[in-house]
Image 1 (cartoon, rainbow, N blue to C red):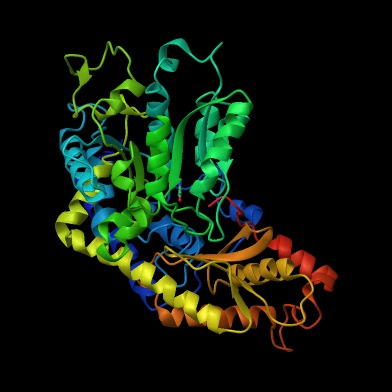
Image 2 (cartoon, helix red, strand yellow; image 1 turned 180 degrees about the horizontal axis):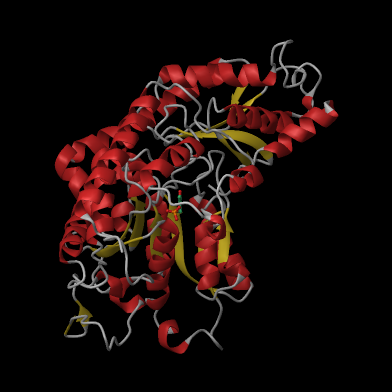
Length: 509
Ligand SMILES: *Cc1c(COP(=O)(O)O)cnc(C)c1O
């Protein structure tokens, strides 16, 4: 039998894999080649034989070229789609180390290094948010799990309800207030926590998609009128669709006045707290009871590295309190020790995710990450100015973060929604750019997230040109007639086929 841990085999394969990844980084640096070699789902599936048909042994290094070729090239400067970071090398290597050392990080004895690093990172992030030295929290796998975790802690902190032990049967139904632009994970969390479909009461937004704090009372009353008890309010910092930062100060005031838990879904934008030029966007975050922050969005980490932070001690423990018989969780006078992070969320085993961020901070310094936030937010403003200045583009709203939504609105098009979809399909299928779409004010918009440290002004100018060209392919094009002059909406067959061609996720970011 071959030695599955053969050190020399691992060394050689590791060199071969790292060489290919370094070539991938070099290749994407120039912006050459497609962002994505688009293949529809069935064609993509057919490239990968079923395990039942694997009659030949293929070393991983030989499989890797096909994996790279078929994947999104997130490091390509023209990937401006979802909020996915282009991870830095230190983080990627740390993830490899996590895969080899595999210290599970549920309790201290399983992962002494990563549990300690997790604590240090929570202190660092907590101080950036303006929390005091009592900050507590945990790392978990994603903002969705983070929001569920924090809202479970919130639910358990509601005076008079011990849902954790007694369930919710016979109790007054609970609800949370949040902006109608909130990420769908909040709604999922509410349903998982037993509040049902009406468990999230939407609060109206202003003309820039920010929660309108003057509408909180009205939403609250609506919840009460339907028999619900509101126990928490969630501020978005920022929203997923447009990057809108809810005004956290007045939301904190409202929460304080009504005895509500104040949670901030800062999965994407809580990092503004690190960047002096954008700190004002999260003013008031220091008053939150809990905050979720995804390091795999704006902090250049691979998925998933999420921090859940609590301003006050004890909140974390209440939510997931169980008697553990077979693991050595330490309790200290009823409170759990910081070093057993598995006690504080739904996950038991988790990767050494803190290692990635800790190692990268040590290697690059905190200001590197603050600068990345500043640069991408600045670039989004610049892009908005360009779009505004162009007669054939329409900005959805002034961007506050690094998310820019807009429409291509040339003259003479009857169905602009269809045009946006057709243009997007063209860009994605040609591999020239990766952009996504979203529906705002009931209109289809193109949506870009400028999150890659390599994306620059020239790429964004080229995006505008590529959109124009996609809508108006040359007469010699084999892709079909122009979408603009004929009116995309009436361009029956072509328009229809193209619109349904690409499988992008709408609303699901
Ligand atoms: C991305 C995002 C989430 C979900 O985070 P995942 O890490 O993808 O689970 C939640 N809330 C907001 C505001 C987000 O932008």
